[in-house]
Length: 107
Image 1 (tube, rainbow, N blue to C red):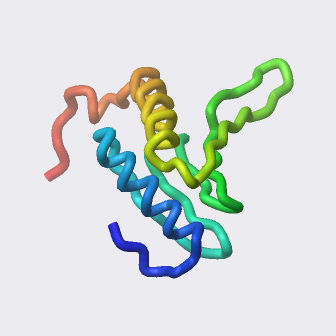
Image 2: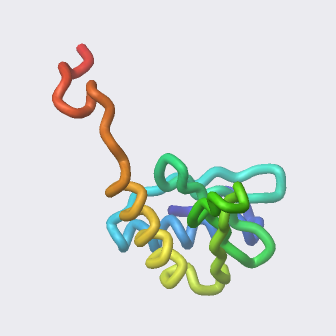
């Protein structure tokens, strides 16, 4: 993937998307407003800003707040490995809706 913007965040996002592809995880890069996003799966978006990758990793029910994980953008392959693990958790927990679980395909 070749980023269209010279901004470091965009390069970091593109490097992460490439590293995720090596892990077998497809992702899309979105750029704008001083931050780049890597969209991986429903509930898994990675923000690239300030030399770090940030993503939602869990929910703290007691405190009623999201827990975020982060990794340095200088290590996209290691970050991709961690994100791929989170992706696998989310996919495993996902319950397909009726149309995707054996319903009729769209015409």
